[in-house]
Length: 445
Image 1 (cartoon, one colour):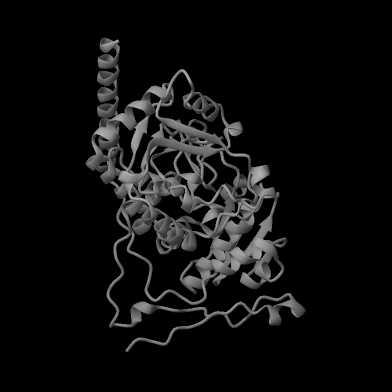
Image 2: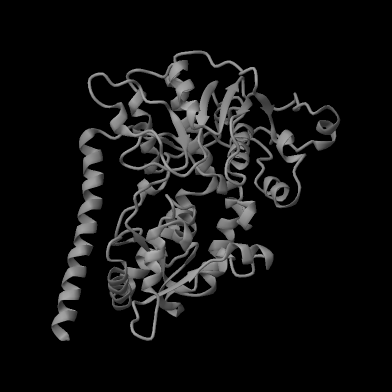
């Protein structure tokens, strides 16, 4: 027989007079003990990158000294002891990145009470990876500091973690993921792919990166049409006017949508991929926790970063003349986002990453003297406006009905090579098609 559901309400009435976190949170909950429940599914394949991100410490483990060395750039230190979270803040992050990241971790503890082990980690909320591989290679190399952040690249060893916007981005009115996913699905259904504008669309802040300013050159003009419709987003005006022009669910009206990085990776990637449109992905330098599971020609169309306009024009012409294949790419991407990036899997990724990380610690985590105990009440009860609304909307109100998905095993050397080689070959094939396309265009002139 299934056990009754445990509710964990937000109790601001009890919290406000004492400023103490409730002591009645459930500390254990193992749905696997209900034998009538089916076993949890295997996690999506991109979870295998957890093993790769932690590989630098697989043989040495992680000492307290190595963690302390990560403090240099960290915004905060998170310690979990006996299922409770303690945070020591070092420096304020940009906007509310740190606030909603910590909020997300607190919701994980509510989702899987008593299941997240004791741990001690440093989190850096800045975009760019800082732990460079070359600084920790060679015979006399020391162990790299384990720094958690939102993205990585091929030259760094930073540990990639889901970004703050899954719980809401209040500064630009982006709702928590669990609600936004539904709105994006509804937005997809409003306009069929064949009835959408047959162009590539991008809207964003070009000021943050030269590569985005370069993209503006691809906009339609009286001299040239590169099949691109590119718009600069003025966030200052949007905030003043109540975000009337920035509703993500109403932006799925073009057959193609461009993803291009900003100063590093951009949180916009998941919103663009969710659109049923073909994602034209300008060659990225960075990855986040799930994008390593995307395959070119299956989930997106690769665009050259050093010849964007011609690359975009070819992609749109190809898609408009291969409509069945183009629709399949757009649908595969939005299915990936809806099914493999649903909020349950975001929490499961966090759960497995923190579990595997905790196994590597060579010491027993203790509560730092300057750390503050945090719980949902300590964060949400003192907030107001959109911060409070988004916390309320993204709060986990009861433990999960089932355990986390089953973590797949690490890649073997040959299998990881095969995955990377398949991606490289797909991109090369598209570049060959593109080259032939432009040779034919030149011959016709």
